Image 1 (cartoon, helix red, strand yellow):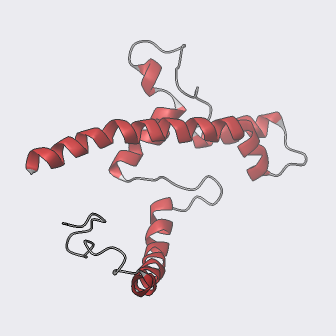
Image 2 (cartoon, rainbow, N blue to C red):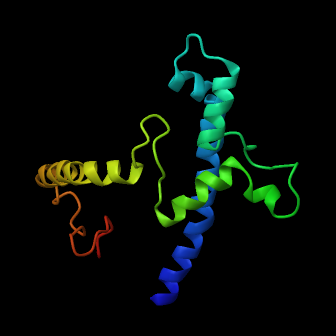
Length: 148
């Protein structure tokens, strides 16, 4: 059983990294750091110097995936992807670029009401499940296959 759990955890690591790369890529295809700076600073009368200053303050002045100007391992570690993604593995979500508040604190603030609503929905939907159509299904053994 322990080997099964360890194997599943090891399978999850490349999946999480792949999902992280995919979401990161999609986000920066839609929103360039310049567009984010213009949105946060205001679309009207924003100078290029103000945009560059905002990017420098928030760490968006670095290349996305590969820093060709750096040498050695810094080519990979001195990038936006590394700076923003490594902290996710220790559940440090950073601060909001817009307000500066902790994203982890915002998640903790909203987690309890969300889980309460989800559990109510699960409890409300449970009586609607027709157990007679699936005679082999039980809460202790969730399988739709009967033992016939």
